Image (cartoon, rainbow, N blue to C red; front, side, top):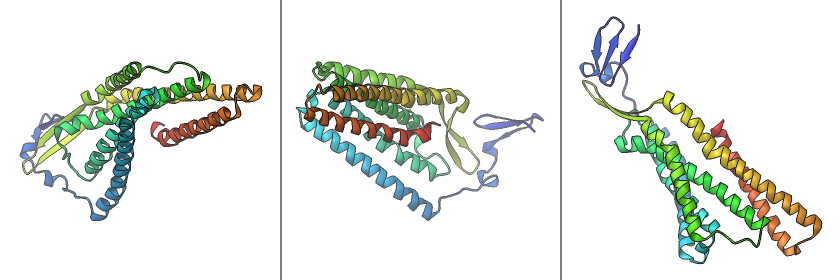
Length: 269
């Protein structure tokens, strides 16, 4: 028997229409509440994640803004941009999603319904794109150590472009979301639904834009760094102290790439 439903009523294949306002929700489903152990478990995971993200990124932002000398280099501006995005992610990610999973109905209201996925996608794009830009900047610093660094206004322009790019790719997730309040006879059921068929292709686009493209840029940059480092080592064109410093930077960049792959690949496949 086929059903065609809208926000208020359902019509059966026999042309009989049944409206939610004429039925009790509890006659068709049980109103469930999370067990105490589930609340404790989810909270014990959520709270440390939020604290680590907020404290770590806040300290990074504070130290960079306090030391004006650090803000004169392009890489530190990009790190500041990434820290701001990660701070927003730390606040807007774990807390709303934990509340969502602990409730049968949507309790965060219409604003968060439209904003939660949009913000998550936005800051993820900003963060990963910033990492790719940092990788490119570090490549120039090692391959061309005497090149002129980007001026502050150019770095700020790149940051603005990153946010515009991220906002453009994130917009469909706000448009593809609907907040609905279904009125039953005995209860009001707020819901936050996504148009899965509409957003399916956009998830693929975002996965490419937020992970695979930045990761490809990082690997290309680090490949160029590794090639030039080996060339300098073989020809002994640089002072040993300079080579030692570049070796440490290369190890750090390889570790960063492996960490990004380890943390992000499981959610992209």
